[in-house]
Length: 107
Image (tube, rainbow, N blue to C red; front, side, top):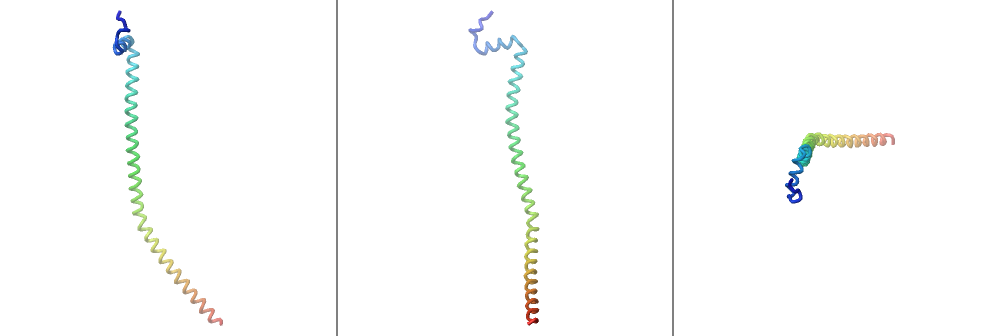
């Protein structure tokens, strides 16, 4: 039998794993899973970051389109409000004139 203490670390590991195939396969499977899990976690983080950027771009574009659609309506509303204010001031002026006329008639 070979003296295991005189062997290097790699040789000792080889001898240990070659004795038991189940342990060898379990270690290889575990190391493989760890490697790919770390790799996929990094990939998923990148994908999530890209999705977040895409969602932000889509939301910004939608907001821009909504603002483009709303702006003419707001402008029309402002013009209408201006016309209504003008009509109200004319009506108030006319009412004041009528009240003044009625007051003058009563005197």
